[in-house]
Image 1 (cartoon, rainbow, N blue to C red):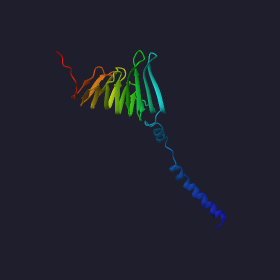
Image 2 (image 1 turned 135 degrees about the vertical axis):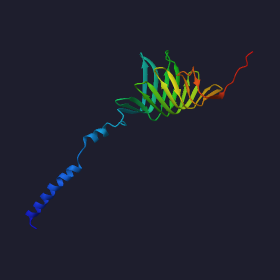
Image 3 (image 1 turned 90 degrees about the vertical axis):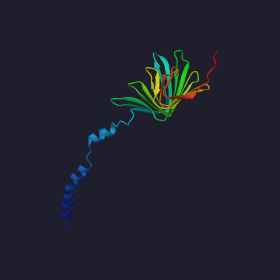
Image 4 (image 1 turned 135 degrees about the horizontal axis):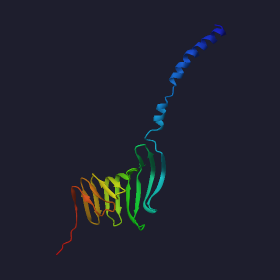
Length: 189
């Protein structure tokens, strides 16, 4: 074959193959936008974080966590604590009011509501200890609740709610559902 004929065949192949390659590499901007704006992408994240929640310049809560993620979705904004957290709460004088530990947590920003999961342990200043696997904490109402099994220990007394529980966040007004437990009662004349 002569060189002129080879060049013509090569040009014809390029002319025919070009549109096929261009079509197969076509970028769909809608697909790219979906990938880039996935709900699973945090707007902010960090390792070994400390956060302070205040009200009128008064420290209310100090939170430490090994992993923090903040999501800013259109309909809902929330903070995720996928590797657990430790919360210390303070009263109006600045004294420690209690602590809370868990392996996972989420705070729904719009409702100011926490969903705390997996080995939840809450302790108040008097040493009362609440244990459960799921706890909701309404920060505005300063109220906690769950529909799961709970165990409240106060000294030698142990009370269990087999079908839920609710209380103020200081554990002063607990209400149990389907109660069982061990109480020591004093004999009164």
